[in-house]
Structures are given as C-alpha cells and as structure tokens.
Image (cartoon, rainbow, N blue to C red):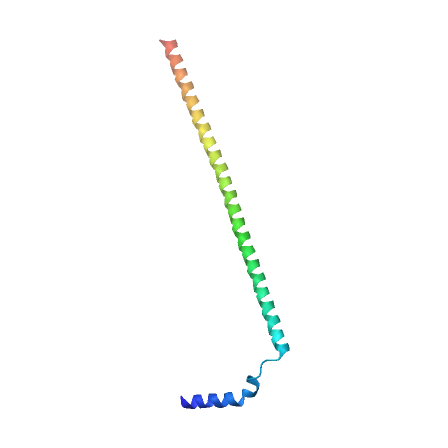
Length: 108
C-alpha cells in the first residue's frame, strides 16, 4: 500500500507542472460553449420526447373515443334490432290471438 502511495506522489509531482496551471482561456470557452450546446440539445430532445408522448396519449384517447362511439352505435343497432324483433313477435302473437278468437267466435 505504501508503494502505491509513493508512486502516486511521484507521478503527481512529476506531472505537476501542467496540472497546477489553469486551463487556457480558449479551452475554457470551448468547454463552456460545448456545455451550453449540450444543455440546449438535451432540452430540445426532452421537449421532442414530451411532445411525442403527448401526441401518443392524445391519439390513444381519440382512438378510444372512436371505439366507444363505435361500440355505442353497434349497441344501439343491436338494441334497435332486438326491440324490432320483440315488437314483431308481440304483433305476431296479437294477430295469432285475434285469429284464434275470431275462429272460436265463428265456430261457436
């Protein structure tokens, strides 16, 4: 362990001439510009992904509404069909009952 510490100190002291100096101004400016670009790029990507997510949610909701409306229309048609069948059956039974009553009256 002491050997590693000794080697680390020697390497630090030998390379200390350019580590202790502050980076040059153009390098700082480039890094600052890169940081600004990176932050702006991340914001734009975040906005794009948020917009895409919102559009996906809206299209799903719109699709669900269309499906609900379609289901309501189909259900309405089915109910109408059942109602029409029931009316027809009721009318048929009334007609049959009237015919039976009429035939009984004419025979009796």
